[in-house]
Image (cartoon, rainbow, N blue to C red):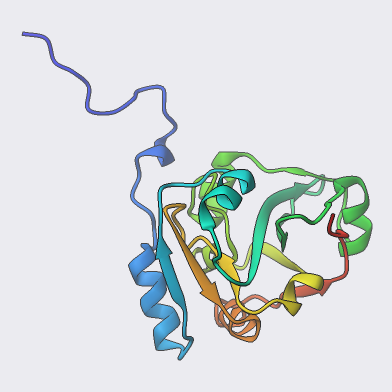
Length: 184
């Protein structure tokens, strides 16, 4: 009798590992901080284009999140409006980093406890060692609410900009709000 593997042996370990913080635990933490949010469920979204096609009239600023590393091995979470033009060759000067590149899925899992497609500032809940520097686009902070995946890309959570800052600080991070990435 043949046995069928229950997992993909070629998949990295994080592909099947449980999230260190579930979306429900995240929402409970936000609630405990007195932060009101609204969460919408939807099919999993992997790109900004998929998000634009599905969201309909969902109000607020819709954002993209870049998990980066610099040549000195410092990790960065850069959060901007979805249409922001982010030039990595210029961003390093704007945020005071060394030369930037995208970090690997393995680093994303080790530092933020999430998988590609689900990157958001909410993942800072898993960076208890404050190893990731946070950069928020100044223009993004003028939108209310702001929309991010709450650790999984099958839902979107809306949060007020001031509450986002409060959450990030409650996770032990001091975000830099920086002007970069003119929108198209």
